[in-house]
Length: 271
Image (cartoon, rainbow, N blue to C red; front, side, top):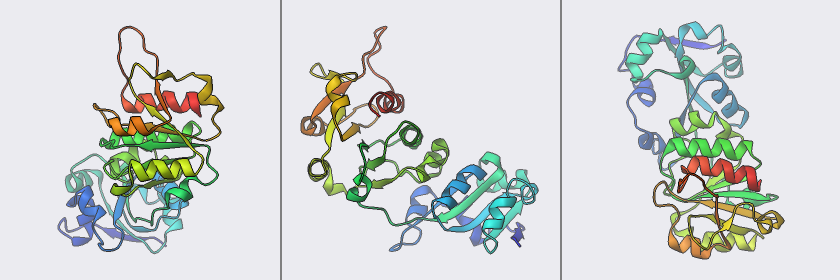
């Protein structure tokens, strides 16, 4: 039976993780242990549970306990479930919750780069993509369009920030990924990819770029598609270290796409 706890005190410390802590504070919440994150909406929470993430507590509209949250709560009978009417939850959290439901969860240890690349044919590398909306959109496209895993540089927005999870529609729990150490990119990371049999393709706007439909790209058994930060794109050293520099042909005088849009095109064409 679900452990239902009506909210009577806005200042209860158990609610800090939902109402008063930033994403960075959640990430560091249990230092030196791994931090926590917030999943939002029944579908996303369900995918996180399927991926083996351990729930800490739920926060939801009381009307959902017997309806759309019923199956979730049956999976987690001993987990505290804080409930209130929607207007109370909006006042508490400061935002309109998707489907009126949040779940705090413990983070899991990250796999190694080698584990992500094992048996993979197409890998995504994100270099310093700092917008969580873009991170979430890229993850969703990668999961949908035949990418086998994602490597994030340490300066990327964390894939388990609430907005990134929400935009990804929970696919962040379905595609393998890890975050590289700051010291490992680009030199050591590139070396590891090459040692694992990957050729690397930098998505960049350069005159010496090959078109994304170049037959040589299709012929590569293992390919890592490297995308850079919003605005500045990939670092010059990263482009120089890649085996290919690749561009998406444009029309109507448009010079580039948003990194999330460019990623979807690249994954569809090269996946």
